[in-house]
Image 1 (tube, helix red, strand yellow):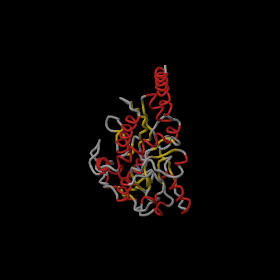
Image 2 (image 1 turned 180 degrees about the vertical axis):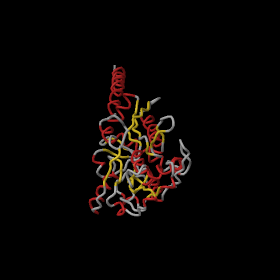
Image 3 (image 1 turned 180 degrees about the horizontal axis):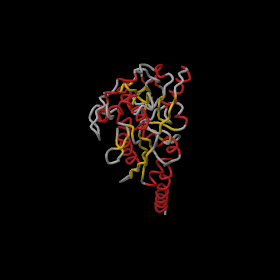
Image 4 (image 1 turned 90 degrees about the vertical axis):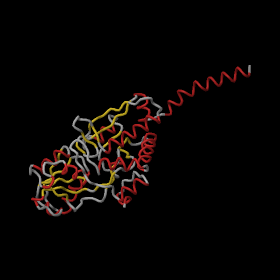
Length: 303
């Protein structure tokens, strides 16, 4: 009888363990397990981070990183297959769509700062940039002060337009600030002389210039509106289990040789669809960040 009772207890414990283990999953991981799908938010013109190729397929540096995260999530949940859904986002919609559950990761060129961390979380930094402006050489805009009284464009919903607005007020420049819906529209305004300059992250400006009809017509400022700022893949706030998986995946990538290979693929080699080369070797600061991955929003921590 004792032996039979013991078998009974063992069977009961085994039956209870299944549901209990399933219940341990929470938040995003639970949802992904239940639906068999993960949704990535992508940008359509943030070259080389996240943009559309000739087949309207999202590609880029941040997309490659997100697919590495997808592999890690699939392994963590022991799934045979995991469907990847793709959802377009803009500077204005990316945080709301993440917060309301439409997307699970935002794969783009989003600055990690203290203010945003009140709403969402970031994984380890994958790039460092600074906010500058691009103008036509013919305009002879040599400094931020030279923008006084002129029309300047920046993309709505970005830290850049906020920095431009603050500098405009602090320096009493009287700039006419024009908000654009995306980076492509903003650059077009400079191209067609509707704005004298476009304020944005320097690497994005470099990509827009490289892809323009006359790259030699433009110059990117030495003057900056910001310190070096970190980019990170965004995920929902207060979801420690999912963040743990995502952080481990990005840390493993950046500390391996593959991290440098993915960087070189998008910043020092020809990229589709036009075969542009941004010629932007990895900086010493980003190399240090890759060696010791961090999700810090503090620009000073990356010196």
